[in-house]
Image (cartoon, rainbow, N blue to C red; front, side):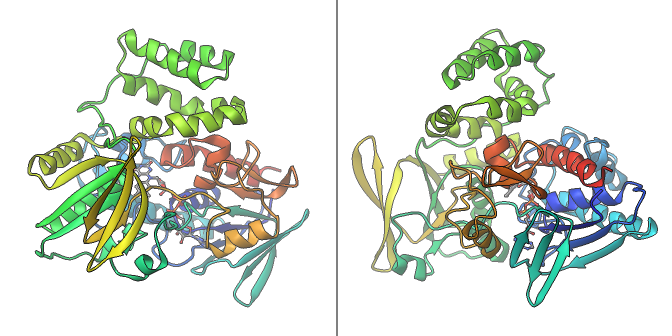
Length: 453
Ligand SMILES: Cc1cc2nc3c(=O)[nH]c(=O)nc-3n(C[C@H](O)[C@H](O)[C@H](O)COP(=O)(O)OP(=O)(O)OC[C@H]3O[C@@H](n4cnc5c(N)ncnc54)[C@H](O)[C@@H]3O)c2cc1C
């Protein structure tokens, strides 16, 4: 058992690991330092939104923090409102309430069990891992611990190539949409807004700003010009033949063959959503078997289709967006943004689509390109320090840090015995590693490892 552990990160992943560790009776006292980076404990970016329009994209019954207590979130919300069903898509702030309540409970339980817990609302600046300890540096303080877990979530978004310094210095280009949404009040001025990217981040931006800015018109640009798919109105039964499908996929680690197998399964009558969902728990194993050129091929040709199908919108969100399109307030446009330039008191976007170059103007451009996990291209101070000092190995495809299957981070081709990651930073190792169902599983087995004798 590691007796002195530091968890770095203040979001849902860290909160889940903390709750797993403190909820168990361990034979010896645990010294736990939790560096939250400031902000509300456990909410992070995803569950820090206070907007009732921002919904979970997973049904309530599948959002427990605890792999061993699957009704956790549903029980929490039904205490206030017994009419809530497990199939409902609830506002994300309710999930934030649940996270905060579980964290408070875990801290209380930990104290009762005699553990020594320090919640430090600061960001860690640097780490020095060695074989028998890790030194955690935070401001003036350096402290040696037995093990460290990085639960940093996604990295701060970086501006796209082709966006000049003068554009970034203007107030017309938004790299990180979350602070804008948190501060947006009602404003009736007309304006043309362009969104670069059409995933769930763009959906959140559209839901919020179309209400706060009732005369704004939106153009959302992506390579294929398609919105995420929608969940079914009612939850469907799981796909029955998943074991056979996964067995066939395991036989040949080839993306084209996998796609053929999935298509064949849909032709046999199952709804494609149930097939995708049944694959989900097996994805880390399948991804692990996929050779690097095949992973590259997947990212180049299929990633966009997988993300659309896997990260789906609740049906009511889909209806709201359809209404915006019908009212002429939302246009979708195919293209790749090559450049954004200042043009008088507006911005000009240069796009390419099917070999042709086009331009369009907007009063405001918002980057909604999704999660940044490229540790080589980040200004996150701790991650930069770890990469610069070669304490960790970047994933070659820009998907976080290389790690073993148990979450231990790699350096020099070997796993550290005492430096772990949880959640988004493991995307290159596991692919499915960013949503709560996967994070809960990881937190549970990481707690087992940290407390094992
Ligand atoms: C908008 C949005 C909606 C989502 N909706 C869903 C959903 O409906 N269902 C679902 O299952 N998943 C959803 N997800 C996936 C989501 O990422 C996870 O569910 C979860 O929020 C990830 O938590 P995290 O702790 O890994 O990261 P984050 O929530 O990003 O937290 C990272 C934390 O690390 C802290 N930190 C960073 N650097 C340091 C440092 N040096 N020292 C100390 N602390 C530091 C940050 O301050 C932050 O508190 C959504 C994600 C987003 C972005």
